[in-house]
Image (tube, rainbow, N blue to C red; front, side, top):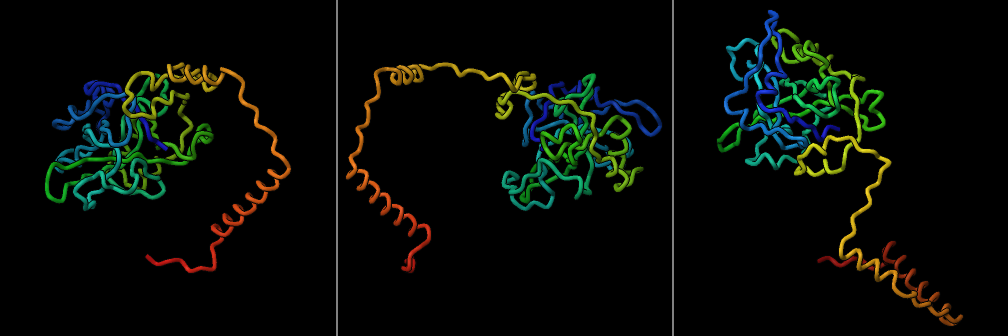
Length: 286
């Protein structure tokens, strides 16, 4: 269901917006992994295969780090599992942008986005996700990718789609989802519930093209208003041609012509029927 998001915050703004409390109650601001802030690009129109900010436990990268210490990473949207054997991740034949909550149990992340739907007060929309690290079989830089977890749609979204992103509502739910040292996986999965907390509005179809990256991608539009297409030189010429002169009247067919056409149609129909239903002749083997 989730195929577009938006995050226009600069890297340092994302870090401030993702501040969290440790188990001891200390307020901290997550840092970006080395070089990852440069891989992230703010955008009004983020599509699969683009990089987005992901918050996760530092323990995934440093086994000696406290499990409740968080870090920001830039990951590509669309999970490439570690066991994938091809040398090019683009050869993945399955869509892994979303993952159903009913059949998951993996490494946990949460993805920051300003807009899949709109939060009151412009708080970041925090969606639960899974991530993995894939390394090219022949060696090379590891690729971190993620997928957005989906659940059954809430009552106010059912008319749009039967699925919705799994929303982590508030800082405490985010902490429980990421803290795999304290929270058991089965308990964390209980957080993945439909929540009737989102508002939404229709947007322009320009969002369908991932190359469009302007504020217009997020602006509300009216479904009732129909934009009249602009006239072009070729369309004006066509309209002029259509309006010029009366079309020639087709002469009436004589009875004999009608009979002949009827016979012709019958023959054509007979041939078509034979082609559709096959013939008694055996097909040729090439």
